[in-house]
Image: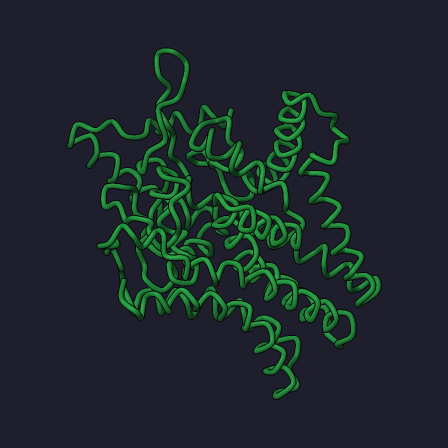
Length: 373
């Protein structure tokens, strides 16, 4: 891997830097309420433009040994102190800085999206790994936004049931984001508790056992909430809870994008076909992949979940998003625009697979409608 690309993954830290940059902009101009929206402008206006300008990166690693290069683990672990420091600073600022209502909303949304990138996306990389340090770091990041159930449900639930009606994070064909989002948030949290209780009972342990991961991470989340209360009083606590909700929402919006309209075939024995790179959307835009630890190579991630981000592969025959996640995120917020953009792409991809004799995914307009009924 060229040096520029190795260093390019450090661009993820530009995202948390947008929050102090927004504050500095507000101080310099006196327009705090407008400046609070600056991170969202960068992420959802400038990044899509730069994505188009810089173009695609379909190249795959030439040396398989890159998967063992521990240098790439350093940025993911560094995200923990950066996230916690930013959280404390931002809670204090929110509690004591004179934002108006518009500025408060902008600051909370901005920090929530930043947390979705820095905390949840980094945790997504970490919770799949073999080392206890990395998995623990992922848990801390998730607890800092109050979505710690993701550590359990994502690995034991989502990766098992992805692209089937059993998965709350796989959007059906024709399902709007606004129908999908509350279902995903509620069901995934409930599923995390259910999966952990089932694991404990199989092992002969009490639900109230110290081995209960959900209880342990919930206590850590409560400790973070107490810290926010001590830092900023009631406003500090309100900030902490709101940024966590918005971070969780940003994650599930990305889940919506990653699996929309794709379904695994059900086999004659009632089981679903093995998950492959045909069951997740892929995107090879260079900049947004560097910003997100190559999360957009999601097709390969689901085919080989333990593969480290620097070794993820681009699959040309996977369904390809017409833009990076930043631009698709904005489209998903408006269902008519989303359908108009994604449905022709999905239809063309299915036709291509069929012409090659590959049945691929079985989701159709009728199947999607039936799954919602």
